[in-house]
Length: 80
Image (cartoon, rainbow, N blue to C red; front, side, top):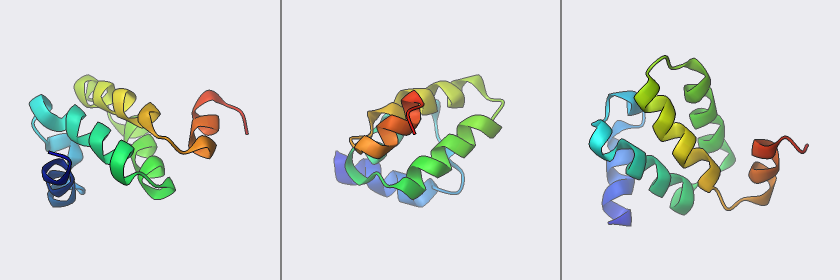
């Protein structure tokens, strides 16, 4: 399931907002948890700040904090 979600992410990384809302949150969460990086974090955070789609915003809000990177967690909670 992790590999399948990763492949869906890779195939749609330039159009994540267009992914079906039924799977988008799970794909994003899996990507952050299993393949997360600072670049991915920055990309998803920028998408959150730019999108007007409330469903996409909710999926990003669910996925972004699932990072296991301590430095990114500090950024999320505002401790630089």
